[in-house]
Figure 1 (cartoon, one colour):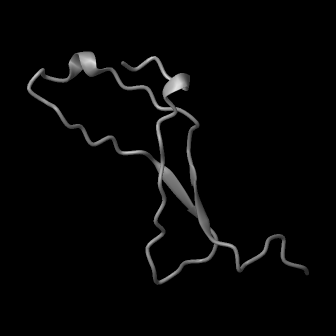
Figure 2: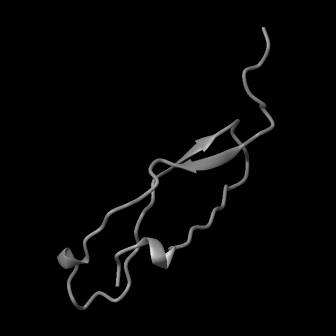
Length: 64
């Protein structure tokens, strides 16, 4: 039986294409906030961390 995917490929993917968070529930004293973004790993296990980056596209958000 043939493999259904390339086993050499590894990566991560975002579980959703957007995240909603309301700063109205954050105390005014807070000037930094760590938002945990859920991601999934795909491919075979590796011995190294999978590092990724993300950016905010300012013209695609209503955040001020």
